[in-house]
Image (tube, rainbow, N blue to C red; front, side, top):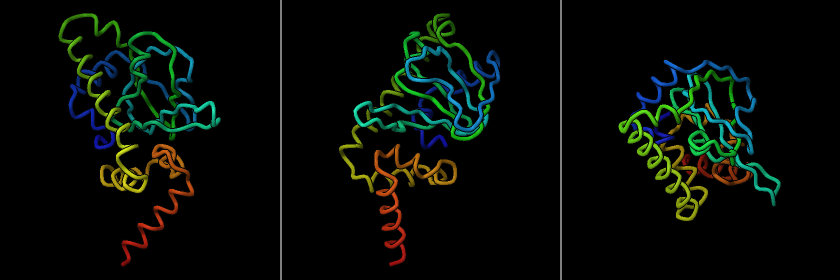
Length: 190
């Protein structure tokens, strides 16, 4: 699902994958199991061998949890600032499906030489660009347009992620998502 996390096309994923698989420790997570909770320090970076992970944050005023991202098999799992700077996480990382991940500490690897530091900088830049674009999309596009863009970018997401999780990611209610899906199915029949 590299179309979903488009930043991966612009970084040296081999470096990160090999680091995790060569030096990392395999970990198994059950469906809905938390890998990292908001407020915890979890200085790890992982490669997902199988499964789907969601990233969430909590809006304290609304007392509501929102999905802010997903990672799929053959992608990475991390709260990137948290794993680099040993700071408290501002998000939760949780398995949507049973997962197998290989995790490794990154900071020591990045400090070894200038090439590793360059790789770290590029990864941070690419994550920023993707996050910034997603932020702007909340203002540039309607919820229906964001839904259609998501399906165009990665149509298989509907088979991998529950609709309520996708609705949260799009920052809409499940009811509104149903309306959009109903409208789309009606429009496609015309």
